[in-house]
Length: 241
DNA sequence: AACGGTAGCAACCGCCAAGTT
DNA sequence: CAACTTGGCGGTTGCTACCGT
Image (cartoon, rainbow, N blue to C red; front, top):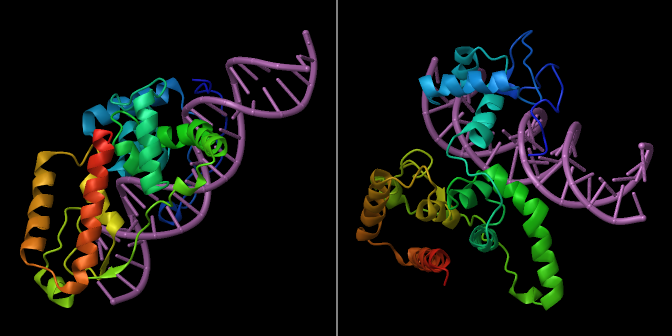
């Protein structure tokens, strides 16, 4: 690591998001000190990360919640994998980026121990250049496909009412959903490290099952086909095919 | 040794969606 | 139902180490 924790100075007032506005409260910014790390680590070991807004207070840190979360997620979390990215990881990042674009958190979700910030930094400093040079070398521009972005679609009113499209927090929209997109379903299919527990997968299977058991009208045909393509694509990606 | 350019990475910023009051 | 809070994300910045001249 080239950046030492003490490298960055700064004790200026925070520039909080709208939600963080507090009168006459200034929080420390810049690099984290070893003692701050220890305070945060012990706090999270003791209380967990249930409410980041309480972490600064519980830890006795003069930091904003975002800063605490970021420090934990990107640095202090013991599950973070350090060191260089190996070839398999690079390959997977390249393929997932081709598929998803800059959805770093989704990509990182397929790389155990890697954070979205790690992947993003790695991409910006290594892989993007590699990709560009690769394009220039083989002249294979035509095969660089645009990442798949959300495509709006309309859920039939009948299905909105029956509420078959249900997902857990941030995975399945409530029954009142008007629009969903292939990418969000893709997120369900891909999941991430945290969401890969069997309970959530089972919930997802049930949701998908009831969704399709109900049948879908003809105007849903393209969506179904799209999902199948996604699933095939992901299957190929994960098996290296 | 001094300097400038670049690489690598931690941290910040602004925004958004979902949840809560 | 509007306003507010919270967690999370992607984009960007800024700093140090490294390297070539």
